[in-house]
Amino acid sequence: MLRRRSPSKKPPDGRAVDRALDEAHDENFIEPGRLLFAGPCEFIFASAKAGDLPPLGPPEIAFAGRSNVGKSSLLNALTGRKALARVSNTPGRTQQLNFFALGATPGEEPLRLVDMPGYGYAAVGKEKIANWTRLMEDFLRGRASLVRVFVLIDSRRGVKDLDEQMFDLLDRAAVSYQIVLTKHDELKVSEREAAVAAVEAALAKRPAAFPRLAVTSSRAGDGVAELRAGIARLLAERSA
Ligand code: GDP
Image (cartoon, rainbow, N blue to C red; front, side, top):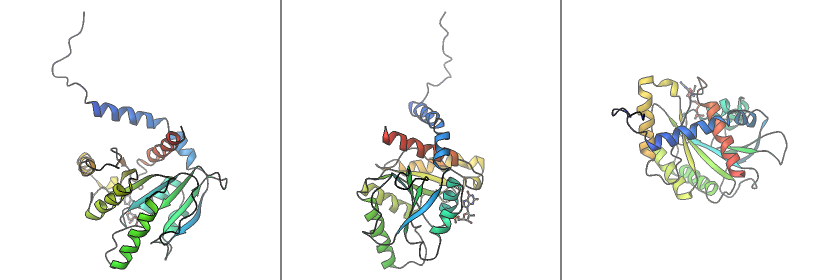
């Protein structure tokens, strides 16, 4: 006899099922992700002005966000070392695009990380902002090796005007980007779902935004292995 479904049981929401399948697939990349970030990570290039970029090489993943969002902490957590963010935070380097090569074999690195200068310092003048925008546009437009930009958003603050401007820039450049929520440990468990939903709502009409967020806490270590896995998956799918 066929069992009748209980009428109270809702049919599964298609999007939720897709998401669960996608997340389950990411699980397969946890170990490749760990290996990808386990090797050396060398500073290779700083770009301070438009037109001054390193020659195209391995695939690149870039990290952007307002200053204090937790970008240095996340890069340290991803790479398991402090040197990377130390280079980017050296005086004079904070307004540059800093390029790092992952992997031991020069010329055959699997990946480059690009630390984009933090935005939103209260005191920067118009000219500096114009320079920053030119540098970003120059990098983002037509950089064939750029696979994805991760835009970091502080879980407690949510999406602010300057973040929206960053999304505008990325949409105009048609660069794929994904939001990474940082400092998730600072939210109460009861606040977490709403924080994710609010950021997802801000992205709903953004053509170049990846619909799934990465939720992280560098302090607690949450979401870091999953972010590495997501990056390993991107690389695997790109070369497939
Ligand atoms: P950056 O300016 O974006 O590079 O941000 P930093 O990584 O320097 O972090 C800015 C501040 O946020 C520092 O005081 C960090 O200790 C703090 N922070 C960074 N990540 C986390 C996190 O995951 N949880 C919490 N609670 N604080 C964090």
